Image (tube, rainbow, N blue to C red):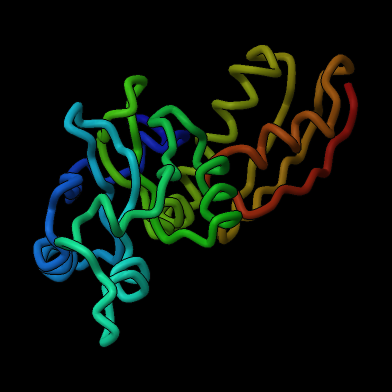
Amino acid sequence: MKHPRTVDDVMTHAMVSARLDAPVKEIVQSMRRWGVSAVPVLSAEGRVVGVVSEADVLGKVPGEDGDGAGPVTAGSLMSAPAVTVPRGATMAGAARLMGRGRLKRLPVVDEEGRPVGVVSRGDLLKVYLRSDAELAEDVRHELLTHLIAEGDAALTVRVTDGVVTLAGRLPPSVSPDLALRLTRAVPGVVDAAAEFTTA
C-alpha cells in the first residue's frame, strides 16, 4: 500500500472548473451543484490562470449603481494569479500554503500548469485518521530504510492515538534527534518521544 506523502496521494482527482468567458450564472450553478466555494479558471490552453470564489462573485458583481460594463465572466471576476500547488508537493507544504493564504482548497497542477485535481483542508486531515498500527509500520519502515540497517538496532515502536514512542537501542552512529525528526515527518504522526539506550 502506498503511504500518503504528497498532495497527489490525497487529492480529489475530479474537479470543476470554469472557462475565462463563463458567465457568472454558470459559475454559481457549478458551485452549488458540486458543493464548492471556489472554482479554478482555465485559459484556452487549459492552464489554471485564476480562481473565482464566492467572495469574488459577491464582491465584484455590479450592484444597484449599475456601473458594470458588459457581461460578467470568470475572467472579470477571478482572483489572479491563481495560487496552485504541484502534484508532487508535500502535504505539509500544501498546508502551509493554505494557511498563509487562508484558503480552503488549492488547484493541483502538473508540470505544464494544467489542473489534475484539487486538494482541500479535509484531504490533508485524512492522514490523521490512519490507525496506530499503520503509523507504527510506517515509522519502522522509515527508520529502517533511511537510518538504521536491519539488525543494527533493537528498536520498539509504540503508537497511541498518533503519538509515537521510540524505545530500545540505537547504533552509536545514529542521533536520537534524527530518529525523532524522521518519525515526526511520517504523515499522521502527531508527536514523537524517545526512550533510547545507546549500543
